[in-house]
Length: 257
Image 1 (cartoon, rainbow, N blue to C red):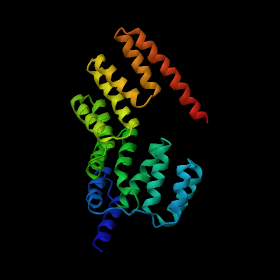
Image 2: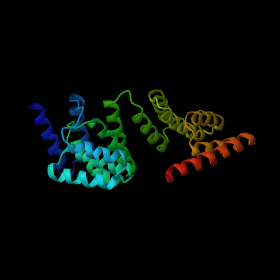
Image 3: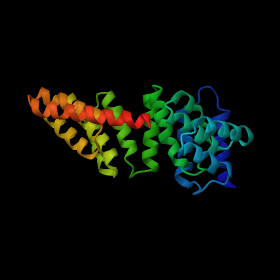
Image 4: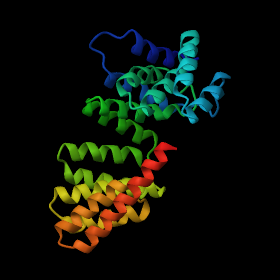
């Protein structure tokens, strides 16, 4: 009963709050509940399986229709969360944001509900509300202290604000916490940007060489070719440029399939 009362308070705060109430206040109100209560492992709604299959196959229109019908019928947090995720995956962050807010208000009542803070941070970051995005990522870091996503995103915000020492520390944390090679590679790519901001092209080159050894992204090879040319290593610059062209064509071929 006590949990139900707390959840109702959170829902009221989200839906009937005065104009001065903000996303920040809603996060502050919701976070203790997410810390205290674990979300369910599986959905209790039969529609969830169908829509998750549609999302996995990028059947966006079908999934959106299913989810909007689900929300209209029951206003469940899981439907709101998945609608927010659907729009986020299509980079429609402004459309995603109100659904993510509804999912936050629902509390940890659906599978993987704790991810709502990170999703909220992405939407806020992409729509320009950087300070509240920072707070959303910080909340995500509280819920997932061993995760690399929050420190990585916070590092990007630090970089944009010129806080290079903070950026460096958070990139180091993300690199340590990520296990997938592709995730580690993206951290190293941004570490190269940090080195360039400090006018250290030799360190940037090393970071990019480590990056492409983990995941051969064509943009990283292009950056590497430019840095090698700047350092006077024309042979390495030419080799990196050839690899840039190779992997760019492969990436485009994958998009066409």
